[in-house]
Length: 305
Length: 253
Image 1 (cartoon, chains in turn blue, orange):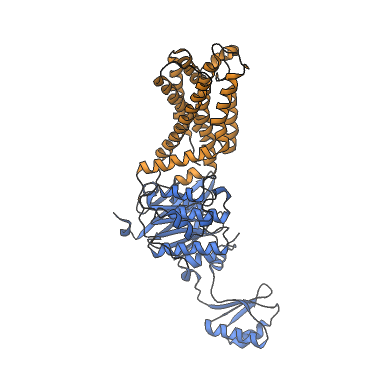
Image 2 (cartoon, one colour; image 1 turned 120 degrees about the vertical axis):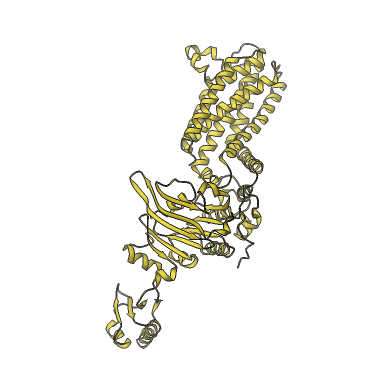
């Protein structure tokens, strides 16, 4: 049986994992469609890493089932790539030695030198793992996860601590993986990462899925709105009068304005026109809910904490 | 914009022989690149052999070099199989290396086989150098090679089991401290450089430790041409007990 026949790369049903009397994962279900990128989004301690480690076969669930590429995690190790959260390298091995070692575990690996070069690591190829910067170790770890040509890749916080350039390289690789039919499950607490990369997002908190959908599904709202920042104490009542009868708005906190109305384009034009007459340049204009808003609405908590 | 090569899935494990070669080479590289390991496995044993054979610090029966070559061989085996394995494995667990290897197609059995192979290769180097230096110092070996190989093989198994037990259960730094301390204690009172007969009542216990069994067995064989069956049995029992306990208690992370 080939994996191409599967339309679900990963299926987790009612997963429960406890550490002592703490329940890290509490009845979580998710599925990853073959060839798609799925993000587990949530604050630290939400149970993301535990979930991924059960799927990777590092932990046994207390309840629930996990099917990876149609089998048990242990049975499909050669078809799965894993990038854990930090660590995992022999300190005294050079980057190229470490990646070459991992490539030798597979029958048809990528060329380690080529992979290092593509991830911008060719200049540190002969640097021992322990002397690499955190970001370089992260990228090497990513290379180790994909060197065996996996069809499902687990990335646990792949861009934590990366500079913008390295982060972009990681995003590029994830998109290239998807383009070639590889399924990816990544965890992140970065909303923009999930928005940028993920076909499906599971918002996780306290070991449970609190929302699930595509990014547009999750961030769509019945009512159009415009949010912007500007000087404090603008005349909101005057703004609303200029916009017409069905609009509501408020300033909260000082200098941040939220205006809601029936139709987005007209609302945006009205707000900017009114600002222009007052000589105000609205900053940070936002017309769509972000995943951060979704998370805040669902849990009353900030995502990044 | 980076142009990626084809990333179309083709995940298939390599042949076990290829994995074993790659992992053994890695284990060997790690051992030889680690200054402390080289000190422990090569420099100190050779240094002790030269000093103790030429300077009359410790009183022994028979020719000095004939007494110390077997003891230093036992020390070398203990350093490579016990101390080196324990420290290496302890830190690999702490650094998450073993866990990460567990997510690859590399089977646990191949990993352990690679570690054993690396230890055996280091021992070949150790034994060669120790024998060469011994011969230069006028060493006259007795006994037969097969007997020596049997003792070293069982000694390696016994010490590996104990080393993996230590490194597989304690934290990296704790392992480092414990393994080095044990190495020093057993070097001193394990019959390696100091005749056990000088140690009074304690010798009845010390004689049963793998260090004494190995050094005494090698000494009986190489110095007197005698086969110490009880020592070989003691090593076999340590090997069975150590490896069995290690495989039960070993934690990969």
